[in-house]
Every structure is written in C-alpha cells, then in structure tokens.
Amino acid sequence: MLSGPQNSSAKADLAANHLAANLLRLRERIAAAASRAGRDVDSVTLLAVSKGQSVASLQAAQALGLAAFGENYVEEALPKIHALQGNAAAWHFIGRPQGNKTRDLATHFDWVHGIDRARIAGRLAEQRPAEVTPLNVCIQVNVAGEASKGGATPAEVPALLDALAVLPRLRLRGLMCMLPFGLEEGAQRAGFARLRLLLESANMRGHALDTLSMGMSGDLEAAVLEGATLLRIGTALFGPRG
Ligand SMILES: *Cc1c(COP(=O)(O)O)cnc(C)c1O
Image 1: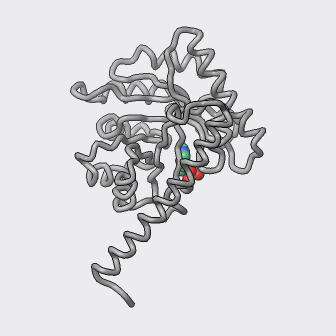
Image 2: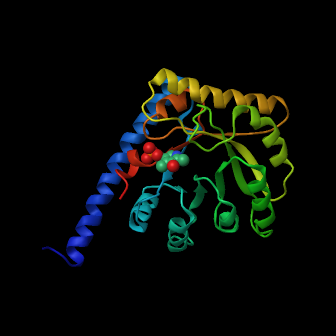
Image 3: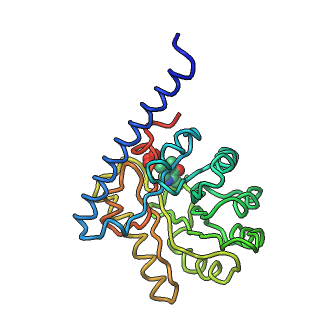
C-alpha cells in the first residue's frame, strides 16, 4: 500500500482540485440563479457547511477564499475553530442550540442560526462575553410545518423577534429555514417565499433584519430566486460528508 508524505500530499492536492472545481460549478449555479432573479450576485453570501469535513478541507476552502464556515455539532466544531485560530474565519452554528451548549456557542461562534426559543436566546445574551462583538442570531422557522423539525411556527415569529430584539449582546439579523428534501422547484419557492414574507412584515413593524438564511445544495436556485442572502452549502462544495 502506498503511504508516506508524498502520497498524502498528492492526495491533498487532488482533494484541493476537487474543491476548486466544485466551487467553480457552485459559483456558476449561484450566478445563473442571481441573473434569473435580476439580483447582484454579491448580494448572496456563501456559507461553507463544514460539518463532517476535516481541518485540512477547511484550510483548503480558506485558501480558495471561503471565509465563513457552518457547523451543526459543538463538539465537532470546537477543535476545528481551535485549529484555524488566527485565520479570521467566521463560525456559524446552524444546528439546534441545546441549553447545555449555549456557553460554548456564546464564546466561540460569530453567528447562531437555529434559535426557536426565547429562553435559549436569553442564555446566549447572558453568556456572550462583553469584550467581543455581539453574537449575530437568526430565528429558525418551520415554514413547511413538518412535525419532526425544529423551528418556530410562522405564527410564533413576531413575538419571538420582539423578545430577542431587546436582549443585550445579541444582534438580531434575520430568519433561517430548511425545507424537506425532494420538493419540486415550485414548492421550494413557495416555502422560501413564506420566510421572505415573514421577514418583510417584521421589517414593516420596525425591525431591521438583513439576513435570509435559506438554500442548501439541492435548492439554492429557488432560494436565490426568493431573496436568500446567505446560502448554507455542504455537499455541493465538499462532496459527500465523511
Ligand atoms: C447540513 C446542513 C446544510 C448543508 O446541506 P447540503 O445539502 O450538504 O448543502 C445546510 N443547513 C443546515 C441546517 C444543515 O444541517
């Protein structure tokens, strides 16, 4: 069996080439969707969802200019955050925050997307260190009404937004959703449009939300068409999760 530094660096080169090719294809998809939507492609931020990926893959992604990473599990994320320390990456927590993990989130992350309870947001506000910038937060909304999924119901969103807006050390940025897999584009667009309308009506009531965190590898086109500002992309970038 081949082994040794030569083989492993050849492997790393190959992986980096795959990543570069995937990124190119992904940027083409985003650009095509933005053009279909009549939107400036720079109005869409790409969040590299790095759950299940190695530190080496994250470093390769950084070398290609990706600056923001999304993780679902605190225990998996902390060593990666530590390994990339000093590299100015932004860390987004995109899982469902558990009560016993809020201190790690408040200390080590820049964004938390999956908030659906005021109590969790209160703990994050309490535990966010005073010497760093406020923690950016999004409320997750269960737009499809799936029984098994996390997220606030659309009806709960206005009160939740009002509760979060007054918390110190948090910066309320917007709304996040995740659609069921395998929907057709029309149904994807209807789901994402629902999130956009919730954000627009919140802003009409006086909030200043600027983030629609929606769209993954399989539905990013529909998300861009409905106004996504932040796409959370894993497999289309890194390939299948290891
Ligand atoms: C895993 C995950 C993603 C990325 O999904 P892909 O289909 O791999 O692009 C996005 N958002 C959340 C919340 C996830 O858990």
